[in-house]
Image 1 (cartoon, helix red, strand yellow):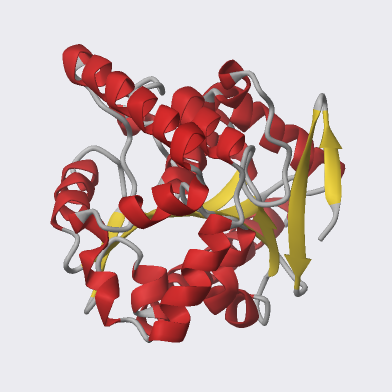
Image 2: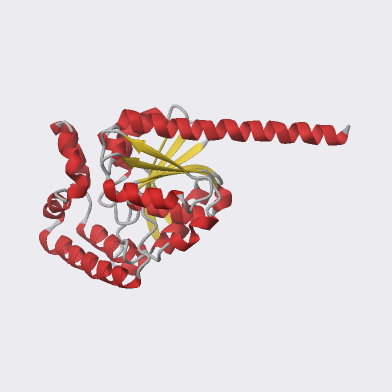
Length: 290
C-alpha cells in the first residue's frame, strides 16, 4: 500500500476498484485492513480509499500528541484527497473513524456525496465528563506505553462493548487481534491523547448543520451507541438509522453480510436520487431555453 506525503507526515492508503470514490476510516487500534470484509464487495461498485489514520497501521506515528488533534486529522485528509485527485466522495467511518468522518462532513460538506457513520459519537457535551475522560484516556495511553500493545489490546477487547465478538469464528478473532497488535505503542497512545473522545471538541451543537445524506449504522446489541444514534437522529436533518441485527459495536465485522447490504443499499439509493435530480435539472434547463 502506498504512503502519501501530507505535510510533515505520511499516510498509508489502500485503493481498490473503480467508479465513484468511497473513503473508509477505521476505528481505534484498527487500520485499513479492518475493512477486509467490505473491500471486495464495495470495490465492485466504488473506488475504495481505505486510509490508515495517523498513528495506526503503516501511517506515521509522531511523538507529539497535539499532531493527532481532530482538526489536524481533518486537514490531513483534505490534503491527502487533493493529492489523490478526489474532490468528492462517499464516506464510511467506524467508531473513531466515524468521529473523523463526521468532523470532515461538518467541515467540507461540499466534498461529501453521502455519509455512513457506524458506532459514532459526536463527542462529550458535559465539560466535567470530558475532563474525566481526558484523565481516563491519559491513563490508558500510559498503560500502552508501559505494558505494550498486545497486553493493551487484550485488555481493551475485554470491555463489555466488545463482548458480542465472542461469537465470531476463532480464525476471524485471531486475524482481528493480529491486525490490532501490529500497531505501535507511540501511535496508539498519542492517538488517545490527541484525538480521544475527551480530547476532541464536542460536535453535538453542530449536528443541525449537517446537511449531507447521512446513515447512522449501529449493531442491535450495542446499547450505548444505539442510544447515541437515536439522539443524533433527532438532531441531524434527514438522517436515517439502520439497526444491524445480531451484532454489537463492530457490526461490519460481526454481521458483515447484513452491514454490507445496508450500506450499499443506502449509497446506491443516494446515487440514483442524485442521478434523477440531475436529469430533472437538465430537463428544466432545456425547458427554460425553449
